[in-house]
Image (cartoon, rainbow, N blue to C red; front, side, top):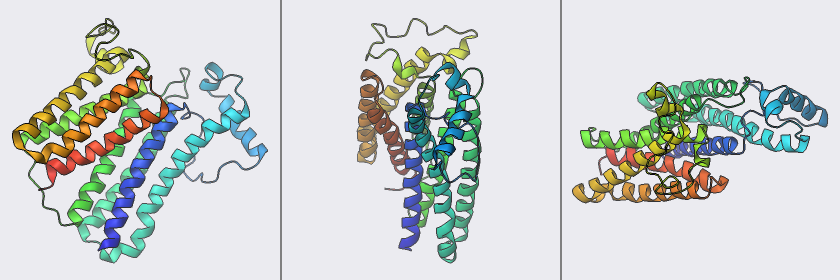
Length: 315
């Protein structure tokens, strides 16, 4: 049924938009502007008194005290709208899941009803994870945990994957059994995305803005700054940026190898990955401008969906 396919596609687009707005919220330093979690909070402030109440709540937060002290109300409104928009989009996605379900329910096979139930439950969990992430930045050090940010992003990719696979199955696509070479490909892309989240959370893209060398070095000199050694692979901005670079280049090389060895089934993915690497390099060299960084993040979702289709759906 065409309406079901359209509905599933709209959910995929809505989730992707949610991730992009979340990225903009982070890049504009807006994520800590709303200091309370109100799941049923739908309406924004309307009157000046409403805005003053919200602003006074923000003034009690560590971010205002240590970073934005003296901020004007108009400046606060700008960052507030980004975070409000991100949270509102989450509620809209929930409505997009449930409302059409009432009209399409009888047209859905049992397995798809179950998948939609899982998506709705994961969406609720995602909201909780989002607040858990924000809470990490409402403490003495006003910085959101990059680990929690990564978990938040990974959950979005899980939801996106369930929706995409459900769409392809509903469209009666035939699926391949996941073989080792494709599993390696998906793991490499996953690791690249995870380290991209670490780079974002640690603001590591604002350092070593040269390529291919990192200020004249192949490996940053402070790569082993933390002890024990394993902490550098998660908490050291220089090492995290280096790993994101290296894994991305390995992923690109591997995808091009598969294209050459196994033919055009990997051609589209290879092209998408070339574009993504170029976007990543541009983001780095330009010191993370909002527009390029958001395109880079959005394109990561395109790459992931193409990778899933390439590896799972019979061509």
